[in-house]
Picture: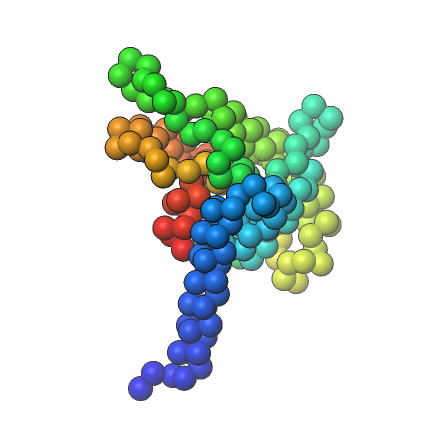
Amino acid sequence: MVDSTFYSENKLKLSILKAVHEKMIAMIKEEEGFSEKQWQEIVKDALLLIYPKYILAERELIVGTDGHHKKKPDFLLIDASGFVDVLEIKKPNDQRLITKTTYRNNYVADRDLAGAIVQIEKYVQCLNRSGKSGEEKLQSILNHKIPKDLSLKVVNPQGMLLMGRSEGLNAEQLYDLEIVKRQHKNIVDIMTYDDLIYRL
């Protein structure tokens, strides 16, 4: 016999996922009616649903220790073990992912995507360079938002990038985009809005 509490919890989760999914589709149709901050908030909620290991997404905290190496990612993601990752969100249709023409018979990352990848790699580098003092600073800022006795850890942080649309790309462009994604998999998980909607 199925536990009624289990059934009710799953029904609630499903209704939340459906609501976020519908909201994302509606927002993409009316993209210009929403600010970047509104996009970031709805996307953050969606990503926390499909990546349940993260217990907190904290907006625009400064990472890095010195003036030259200080950055402000859209979100720092904290997982249930205290490990810190980075999330950067761009609006769906403002950014180009892959070139429209080929270079030596290959589609390559467009300037917007290449720039966003470098941006995230710098966030990751700043986190790594901050060392123990960076961990302690983040701990003091986030102590009241994370479970008691959870220690934050900056150990090979990963970046997650959400930008652009894969809808409208031809099969070759999609294939070459996947190659670009896999080239950076060790540092950045690159996801389009269509990927996010599909995962939801």
